[in-house]
Amino acid sequence: MDVFGRIKALFSSRVEDDDVKNESDNPIRINANILKRSAIFCQCGSLQIPIEKEGNIYECIKCHKRSTRNNYNLGQRHYDPNHLKILPRDSSLVINMDYYDDAVRLLKKESNS
Image 1 (cartoon, rainbow, N blue to C red):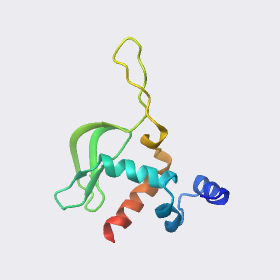
Image 2 (tube, helix red, strand yellow; image 1 turned 60 degrees about the vertical axis):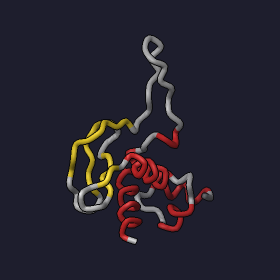
Image 3 (cartoon, rainbow, N blue to C red; image 1 turned 135 degrees about the vertical axis):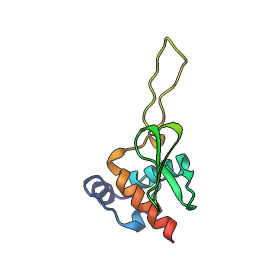
Image 4 (cartoon, rainbow, N blue to C red; image 1 turned 135 degrees about the horizontal axis):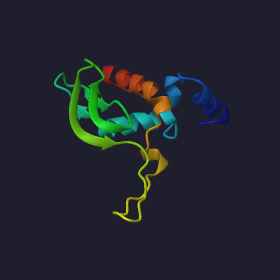
């Protein structure tokens, strides 16, 4: 992604669809991939994605039905030397809630095509 594309991604809630589809380092694409990996299937056949950084509530991108399932943590993990050694995650595995809505729109568009 060129410099203009990165600036546009930072200050705009909407990014050109071609930029998002083609750029793996785009924050919207990263969020969409994280949500896809964490998703479960809804009864309607679409994806139910996590609705926040941590929790157990999922919402369908098609019918908007919510369900409570497995716990998830899409945020940064913390290291506690007194307990199990849990290493912080790589930034490509941590969801950025600033781009959550754009990632949901991208997933909806991809599921309709």
